[in-house]
Image (cartoon, rainbow, N blue to C red; front, side, top):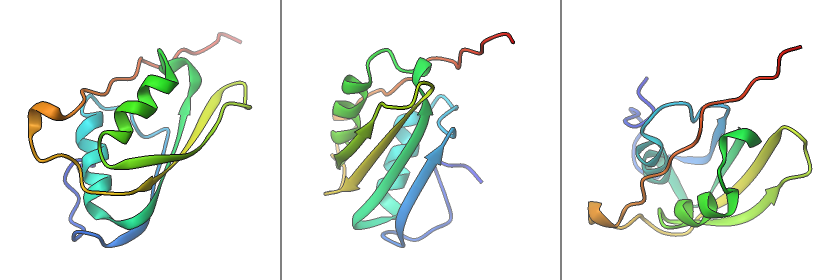
Length: 111
């Protein structure tokens, strides 16, 4: 299944979870699809490796431009960030207004 084009109808689900799943190159498209399938007020949960973020606060601002509002950001874990968003509106229609979200590749420690 292509995460940017799921077979789900519009506003069909209450929760979308991306747990170590934002590994592709089309993050903006993945989050637009999450917005499309989420009911208004639906929850978007993201668990991602801390080392993938240049600046998690900037990432949050960009996700919020896609129709989400940050409810909580847990930075307490030493390896992961846990982000909880709520869908507040549909994303902007004009493509030029969409952010180009990016995350860095995962860094692994040799053991």
